[in-house]
Every structure is written in structure tokens, then in C-alpha cells.
Length: 289
Image (cartoon, rainbow, N blue to C red):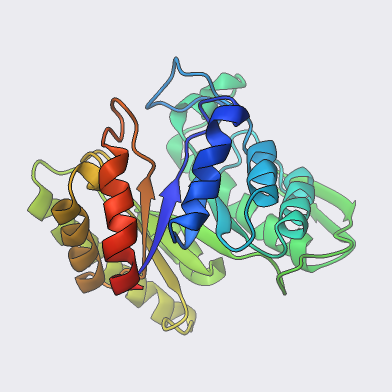
């Protein structure tokens, strides 16, 4: 089981740099940051751009994988974003992971658009497929419903070949089929439930549906990454060491390969103490990797 840590881009870099360094030093496998203009969980919080944040993180780390959690077409275009992807992959020495999804409601509304959930889902499928083409082909021309490209170039190409990994966020069948078709992995936070046991039961069912989607797509599920947002709306797994270990065990039983957690904050969301995280890193991570 691999474990990642998410560091929200809510403070100035001078305050956040030690956390990114610590994420690598503590032994986490991957580190993420949210790719939003505004996040619904902290709508009044300070917020910084994802691409410069990950660029800075790449320069103060050397081994940990770095990812977007998650990029969306709410304010990204595949052609322009491809240039950011090439730069992040290059600067990090091939450590960048492109987490992507349909995107949040606030970001969708912020630029004045008015699309239904179905339209946003369709747009995301077009975004992911065009981004895949622009990162793997040169001279791409495309005219779609939501995006266009006219002789888009991809030089010099990604450090990771044929392109950076795509980890696709999905809970519904259409998104899971897209992940099976195009993704190197899948990430989910599960569906809201009234109790924790039902949440885990739903995750096991989702993992089984992901296996079915991979089989239909003719994909080898043994190399396909399955990421679980272990915190979600349930609170931080770093509330206690026992809570973290319970999450690892249940996630493994449900077929997940990776947990994505969040750096503890002083208040909600993801309220917890750094002491528990450090204990987990010292005592638990070496045993489960």
C-alpha cells in the first residue's frame, strides 16, 4: 500500500515549503495539491496557484511523486495545460502525476459559465482525450464540442513516456469507463453515507465495478493504480494511529493500491495533530510499503 499526502495551497510558500520537504523526508510515496480557483471546503481561505506551487515543490524535493488533485476543464484548456504538464514533468525529473476530474461546482460557476452536470461530464471526457493526444502526438488538429486545437505541438514531449500518468477521478459509471479507457489509475472519495461501514461497503462495490470496466476495456488491472481519498467528509485519518491503520486495512481489502491523505490542519477540514502523522510515518509506513 502506497500512501500520499495532500498539502492545500492555502498559505504563502515560506510557510508551506517545510511541509513539502517533510512529506518526502517522512517517506510518503506521493504528494498532491488541489487544483482549484476556489475550493468549496474553504471558500474564504487564501489560495495559491497549483502549477507554481508544484514547480516550487519539485525544486525542494528529489524523489517523491507530485500531483494535481485534481485538474479539471473548469478553467483549463488541454492545449495550454499540456505546456504546464511538460514543464512540471521536466522540472521534477519525471515525477509528475496528472490527477484529473470533472471539477467542482464553485470553479465551474466562477468564470460565468452555466453547464449541467451531464455537460460538464461530457466536457471532461473531451478534455482528457484531447490532453492525451496533445501529450503523445505532434501536430494535433481537433474540433470538438468544447475544445479545439489547430496544429498543436508537443515538443519536446514528456520525460515519462509515452506521457505522464493520468489518475482519473470518478464515482459514476461514465467516469469509471473513462478511467478504464484512458487512465493509468483511478481515484475516488466514495459516496456520502450515514455511517462508516456503509461507506466502506460502497467503496468495495465501486472497486468491483472498476475491475469490470477494466475487463471490458481490455486493460491489465494488475498495473492499474487505485487511489482512495481516505479523508473525504469523514475527517482526517490522522486523528489517531489506530484510525490510520484501520483505513489501510479496509482499503487494501477493497482492492485499493494507494491512500491519499491530507496534511493535518488546526481546524476543519482535516483537523488532526502533526504528532500522529509523524508517528504513522515512523512506525506504520515502513510496515505497509
